[in-house]
Length: 171
Image 1 (cartoon, rainbow, N blue to C red):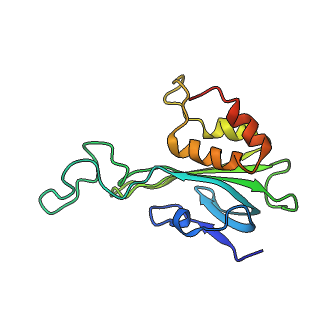
Image 2 (cartoon, helix red, strand yellow; image 1 turned 135 degrees about the vertical axis):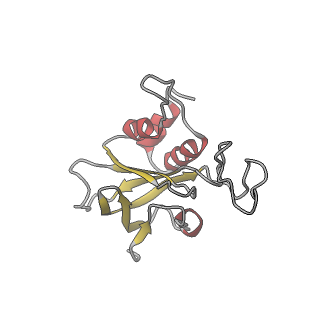
Image 3 (cartoon, rainbow, N blue to C red; image 1 turned 135 degrees about the horizontal axis):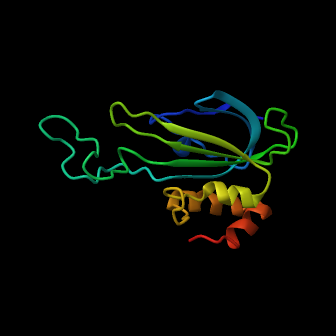
């Protein structure tokens, strides 16, 4: 096992660019509003909607950045998803948890904070459900591109996730 891998809440998280050994069992440290959580597992899928270039027009307005307040800008606000397969010897995850689905919503807009969710799953179908997004109380479910990429990556190494991905009910 290697050193503890950490995913931080916030826009400075670079694990997507730095982590080059998915599928190895590692000790992970992730954080959400409840604090830091540690577990042993394999990172089997990851994705981001972050872009380097701002797409809300002129990024400099009177010497200050407009932070995408006029148009949605994926360089100002984006989503990240990480799918972990829990190591069978792990004792830190909830009993029965086979997967951890960790989602982040970082922002560089002043006054905004990163939203984070840590959810534990017992099946590939639950992983698929946790990657699915709904807008509003009864919005139509959809699979954002970053989430689809993460689930597709996980499907390549986990049969249960692959079954749920292939047989999904959302586009």
